[in-house]
Amino acid sequence: MATQRVLIIGAGVIGLAHAVTAREAGYEVTVLERDGRALGASVRNFGTLWPIGCAFGPERDQALYGVKRWKEIAAAAGIWISGQGSLSLAYREEAWGVLNEFGGGRGDFELLEAGEVVGRFPAANPDGLRGALLSREEAVVHTPTAIPALTEYARGLGVELHFGVPVVRVHEDRVETADGRTFGFDRLVIAAGEEMRLFFPQELEAAQIQPCRLQMMRTVPQPGGFDLGAIFVSDLTLCHYPAFRDCPSTAKLRSRLEAELPEHHRWGVHVIAAQHHDGTLTLGDSHEYGMDLPVGSRPEVDELILGALRDFAVIPDLRIAMRWQGTYLKSRIGQTQVVLEPRERVTMVTAMGGLGMTLSWGLAMRTIQSWNT
View 1 (cartoon, helix red, strand yellow):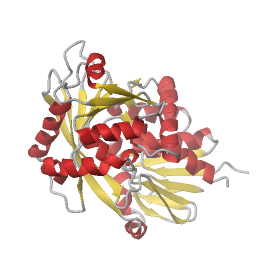
View 2 (cartoon, rainbow, N blue to C red):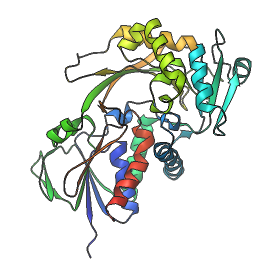
View 3 (cartoon, one colour):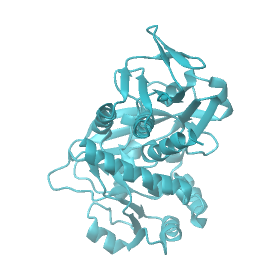
View 4 (spheres, helix red, strand yellow):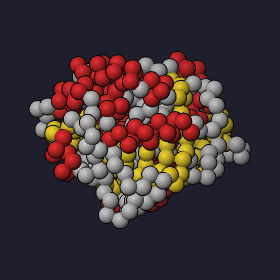
């Protein structure tokens, strides 16, 4: 029996994870990317691998598998990765309640009183600090270098990659590209980021998916010796991720934050600070939804992010070296990964809810396994 051909549209992290996993399983794999390199959400994020944001159960297991796979491939492909963990800082009574409800009694986490936090993490702002939750499972990669290195790793496995080749039409067993070529497939995976809207738009609309735009920044390298020590988040983030949704204090915290910080709520601001090997900090982000978003970043939103950061972190040098926007598709009904099968042998994977770096490897494994059942 001939080796089955897997064709993948999109060379971001979701597409590459499927390409590597399919190739490891013995498939013949080809990837088509419309741009000269991955330019979408995969290189516009924090680089955080984020199990703490994933609901307990199968999704958290999938996230932990994703961290494991990243560490394995990083070792083989020369990708920088830092298993620094995360520190969720609480400044409001309700936030401290969420952290106690979430982490109390769980061996994966360590609850720290305020004095212990400052002693172990000097970058934490001590003013009003009630305590923090330390998790050791989270990690950071530097996406501007990690995604190109992952691309080369896939190529080294025998994955055939074509860049600057937009797909314009999908047929039953082949696709057409803008330059007039056709590529046949036995299995097609569409992982084209926001360009997913060009393929099977009715199915996407029925799945209740919408564009989400965010604003992010990167600082200049921090002075020598400064080490954040973990990925830092605080009160706002506890209302953002599914993992905290069922904590009794989360609703109370959300109500308080909406009353105290209405502009942060308006622009969907929650703040993450992640440090990379070059000493820079990636900061963000905000969330705007809809099809008709204005061009250009909003300086006032960047200031909301930086102001919230100062509330929980003491950063030596907050000069901004780079600002950018990211856009991805997000479920309107709270799903963190949307998998559609609009046609036999065609799988669409999208709307990872900002967790694509974390969940893509587990999703890829599940996709490839489903072909053999």
